[in-house]
Length: 291
Length: 272
Image (cartoon, rainbow over all chains, first blue to last red; front, side, top):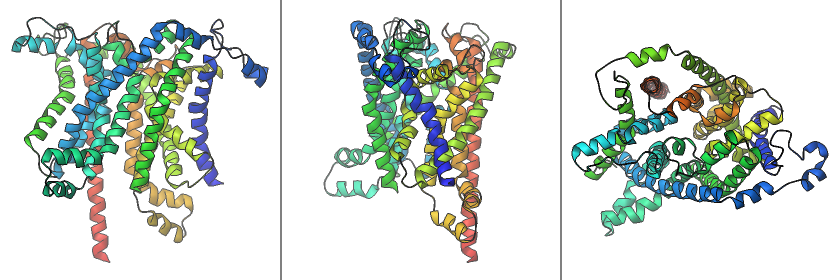
């Protein structure tokens, strides 16, 4: 009985506040646009038959007709993909350096990686506005060094969005890779070198495959939330930056078209389901391997 | 692996510079007396002064704090229960769904979570305000708590708990007197994590709230949309300062706790 209560409380909480809301989004996405205020037709009260027969796909049809949405999905995928790779390229050497640092430094280095993660996301994105603007610190510095003669336009372009994503999601990439690298048995690399591998070959053939779980986890942790990102494209991106999170937010708050906003969310979720399931599998496999 | 090559040193140096320089610049320029944010005109604390006279910011800060304390406490209770179920629950109906619901909110885009919760609150006709933000924040942060706590639960020696049960403790007493003190550092860091996630959240709070409650991130958001302002720099610096002090204190405390536990273990070994 007590066991039942222990399971039931968090279970019911998540059902009521996580799963049921998605069902509602799904339902609203199939409702009539004309009635953009609740209650939406058809409702549960009319019975299940009416509920199914009354479903309306016009919102999804609308999404296919306006190429804004397709462009936004495509450009979100592109931005999320390239920034994940950029984050990996910045994060892997850092995680590798941390794992090779003397043991007594590691907790401190680890804390230095986690600290920005605890610091406000919004503020960390905002910090870049002052750096990347035309009169910003980066341009002042580059002009002073003499690399450029005219200030670069970085803020309000996709470049700023890439920088913002790499910066804010870097800890998500470093931590899983570091966890994998720290467990790695040094003697395996020595064995590879004894057997005639160069250091680079040993790295490529032994270290990288053994840290695969960390790389996969890190990439998912960056890619999935980056795809639906709203704050970074709104603050650092320009009017040309199309990202689906921003489109959804504006559809909802500016146009107040809830059924269409819900349809946008449903498609985003469908795109995300595969990476989310893969991520969850990866996590569970790792947990089982640890036990 | 104690072989830091020059390459490692360079990548660590540049990496940490990349992580910390933007925040450092922000903090330094919050003490700039000029209204122009990128031109240094001398040291001044005037923006901190104007910030503390800004009623709107103070009100929003109070709302944010209330929401964060309530939601992180609730999330810690629920998240610890969920972690216990995940690690010790054994098989039960819908276990896969349950673990899916624990992991999915960690990666779910905030716009989707926010939208779905708003539609729920409207659907059941709940007045939106502080309470609905608390419910929303509790839901996503309990998942973070349960991940943190379950990693600690899965690594500790189960026989300690069994010993307590053999010695006549009830299930609940065994949890309260043996398990909870052992997992306490994870529970505390779970609470802190939930607390900062709640302080930080803009998107979900924007969806979940009504006209009656504005949180600090929402207030910051509406002012930074207009560009950089020295007042926001001052506010950001205060928040960065609080987090830095908090995290350093917490990590020192957990280090001292670890040292004490090790000493007690050594003493116990010597005694036997």
